Image (cartoon, rainbow, N blue to C red; front, side, top):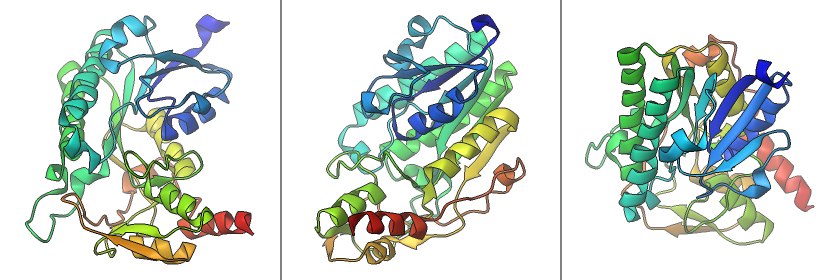
Amino acid sequence: MENNKKIILVTGGAGFIGSHLIERLVADPDNQVISLDNYFTGKTENHIPGAEYRKGHTKDIETLVPEKPDIIYHLGEYSRVFKSMEEPYLVWDLNMDGTFGVLEFWRKHGGKLVYAGSSTKSASPRPSDSVLGRDLSMYTWTKAANSELVANYGRWFNLPYAITYFYNVYGPGERDDINHYGTVIEIFKQKFLHGEPFPVKSPGTQTRAFTHVEDTVSGILLAGEKGEGDEFGICSKETFSLLDVARMFGGEVEMLPPTPSTRSVEAIDPVKIKALGWKQEHTLPEYIEKIKKTKH
């Protein structure tokens, strides 16, 4: 019966990672899956049959979700580093006001919260001025602050939670909007398919721990099922510079000026998520090779 199902809420469920998460969740017939998305970057094309989709802001979650979810996967936040410096009001609205709404909903109704934190929180200080990763931009600061607030809510109100951290997620369904909210691998993929130069912000040697979306979702689900507390990093074991990625695709590179948020990201040993049974199944070179084969 419907009433016996586990109610699962995914904020940002029409987005890149959220849609992959929902696809896995609806595969279990015991789950009733609800998505709450404002469609700022989410798309109706990402809808997965078997889930219910509701449009709205997370700060209005009380009126949009009358149910009491057993678990909330909170992915629905603003998620671009450089672009956040151009629209701080929007970042505050989505990440601070929106997430506060989710936390209050969680406090009142209970259940478990799985929060999608940002790995920028623990990035090494920038060599040029020693600025910490969490202070590089409006986005990174709000994500770090929210990770701390989630942990405090859990402690203050005795609520179960797990905080996950993503590392440059790539895979089918990424955004390729280069001027606004696109992700680097999909941007490079589209440039490759159209025979155009790859845009690389100087110096190009900055590294990323690119992690496939299916590996990321596997980690999120494990954190939801068995994780307790903070620091569930979901990270590939390899890092590649942006120039490395361009060379893997093959073609010309267009060097662009650096931005204030330009930084390197090192791979971490995801000890806590591996302890729950997680292992990396995909690598970036394999993904790029598949893309290259489709063109020939």
